[in-house]
Amino acid sequence: MKTTTLAIASSLVAALAAAAVLAAEPAPVPAPVPYPEGYRAWTHVKSMVIQEGHPLHASFGGIHHLYANERALEGYRTGRFPDGAVIVFDLLEATADANAITEGRRKVVGVMHRDAERYAATGGWGFEGFAGDGTTERVVGDQAATACFACHQAQAGDDFVFSEYRP
Amino acid sequence: MKTTTLAIASSLVAALAAAAVLAAEPAPVPAPVPYPEGYRAWTHVKSMVIQEGHPLHASFGGIHHLYANERALEGYRTGRFPDGAVIVFDLLEATADANAITEGRRKVVGVMHRDAERYAATGGWGFEGFAGDGTTERVVGDQAATACFACHQAQAGDDFVFSEYRP
Image (cartoon, rainbow over all chains, first blue to last red; front, top):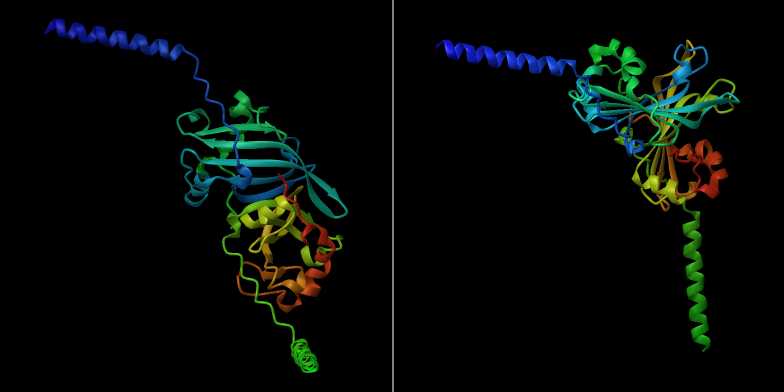
């Protein structure tokens, strides 16, 4: 009986030691958010123009369109976005001239990519931005928590999504 | 020989008379352009905001989005729109406030529907507008030639289409 108790105690100590080692390791770096190939054929959710003087102008000035893949559309419908849901924030220059605003060059392709486990630290969403028309220059990288999630966490009640699908 | 010539002449007279009767009939009324069911899931082509002071503001003031079905996308790619191509001009109120322009209520769903034979009188395109969020209140009707094609015919070199697909 005594031996058994000692054996259990010993195992517990070993387990606790292993746990301590794990805790000391740096948090795992989430896998990079993939470029949203083919998003221009996804469903258009809504659009908005952000002009000079708007508090978000420095980051998001221009005209932006939101696009959703099928799983993201399910999220807009139900309020819960399943893994694999992807929302694209397609930001273009907005050219104001002669009482019209037209689309200019692409500034950034912003992405929210749902993977509850992989991106647990940022509400289950991976955030990234791809500069201009390219698919490789990442403008968020490991700054998602401060550059994106700091604002999005205010939307916890809507699964961290600001936009709503416009019928 | 003489009889044959007379017979031919007689046939010609009969044919000309028949043609005259046809010409005297009123032009056939083109079939109504169908409401573009499901267009919100079609591909978003581009968008634009038309503000007060713009020459088209009375008709098209607000923010509009263009959507294309698969055949219309083929037209944007090739420059020739096949029968069955449909382009939607989705016009919403544009609300300017606090240095942002957001989408308001739907004003009209404009439609260009390709059928070269049916709509031969207007460049092979049927034009219609459906008021607000409804699918039945038609705002163009039999006025397509003056209300729509009068401007679109300037685009004959582009198959009567103004917009270009934004990649």
